[in-house]
Image 1: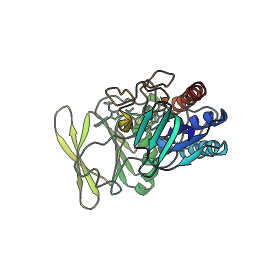
Image 2: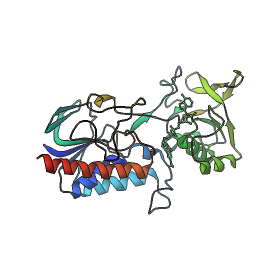
Image 3: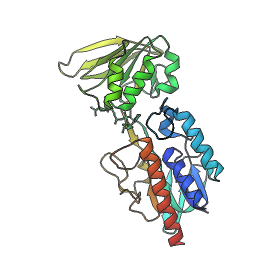
Image 4: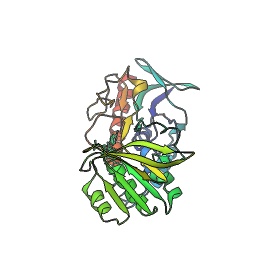
Length: 303
Ligand code: NAP
């Protein structure tokens, strides 16, 4: 049995592992895919203290090495259920059952889809949710980004240095993302911003070859020929598997105060799957520190 199991190896989960190991607790980190989480999609982090520029990939590697170096154990299995028996919690994966005195849910979020016909089938054939992963395939080609948050703005900026032409399609007339990003984009000669419009269709043979765009104001539609569509319309928190133990808000985020407690004693939540006002790298790592500190306190008091 471990003292603390952390579900999710993004910045929140890995920071929690660092804090829990520095408090001399045994720590297992369970991760479904690979360590790093959403920050892996960020090519250049400019708003995290100490480094003026660092890629999400390099940041993740450094935090992973730090947590491993302190003795956190990492296992790459997806947690599908938590069974709460009070003092002992069992985290179930398709392969194993792991037990701990406390559990931190740092599961983050997954890409929101547009829900268009062919969207799933065309992933890797012109449809992508990750500009830094797939942007290189679109050098000197035509692409579109859909969304109006920081991810969409940063994706469009990143792609504007690679692609010949970038359309940015947003459903409103003002962006949700930062003004700095928006201002940089407006200076890019190869970026065309289409406001008040939705992507309403994917036109493809084997690969995507055009999109249908519908103007929200007058209902007119047009087709834009392109090679790639980058969908950046937000994220959906990954709390569904644990809904019986955690109170979720209407959008599916885990309700918790700044102390990262959930309604189940010994179960804590940290990072982008927690209901909070600001989802940034710095608040994810802050959550990790807080959740681990509270989990350590719980383990010390309860056992
Ligand atoms: P977000 O802020 O939730 O923005 C999602 C965008 O997609 C919104 O503009 C939204 O439009 C649009 N959208 C949602 N559903 C849509 C649909 N079905 N069709 C068309 N458009 C749709 O998500 P995000 O950009 O992924 O960012 C997530 C969080 O990470 C944010 O807090 C963001 O600030 C943060 N982040 C920070 C950085 C950074 O600081 N460098 C970088 C990336 C992300 P509406 O605006 O009309 O709702």
